[in-house]
Length: 220
Ligand SMILES: Cc1cc2nc3c(=O)[nH]c(=O)nc-3n(C[C@H](O)[C@H](O)[C@H](O)COP(=O)(O)O)c2cc1C
Image (cartoon, rainbow, N blue to C red; front, side):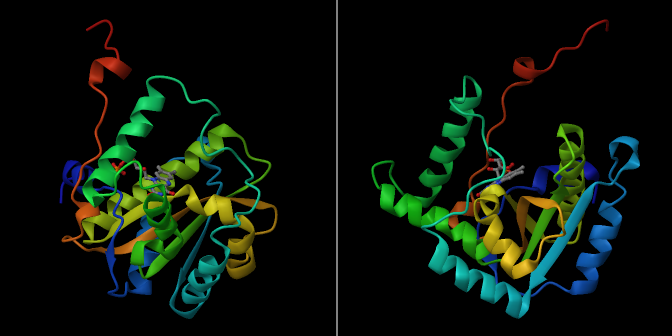
């Protein structure tokens, strides 16, 4: 598979088949993904992979705790999101709920759908990416590079993913069940598994801003 094909096929999958994923394959993918660059080669990431009984226990606990999130350790979005970021966020929500057939007025159903995050959208594996609290924005971006490299490599092996900052709202719960590394804060979870291609939520494509809106070529 060409890289461009993996880039184009990767999407945030929000409905998975229950089929298990081989632990050896996950390890291989993570080891390969660790070729991702990081400033000063700090490799500031820590990753925990959870499946089987511990994941079932975490998901069961999430069902009890979903209505009482933990205090977050960072802001997932800046306050009072401005344009054009605000509209982009709004649009992807509308596109997703449109695919699901849940209207804007149906706040309860939208909330119930959102809670699916805590069940990993049915994925058999959940990854947790954390970072040393002493790190700053450059190291956060390094963790993002590891995540994206992993997601592309997963696609090459027929797997799908959904990165999930959702879990940062339940960082204490994750810590209780997974045991985050000492001094680390949870940045993001990630669901991993095989996509349910028939699920309507997997059949919309998020949009992208036109090139001219965010890039300039000068001196060519
Ligand atoms: C760090 C990060 C965290 C995310 N957290 C969530 C999440 O908690 N739940 C969710 O459904 N999608 C989450 N997403 C997926 C984004 O909504 C998605 O990447 C974006 O809408 C673009 O769509 P695409 O991934 O299908 O291309 C996250 C993405 C990133 C990069």
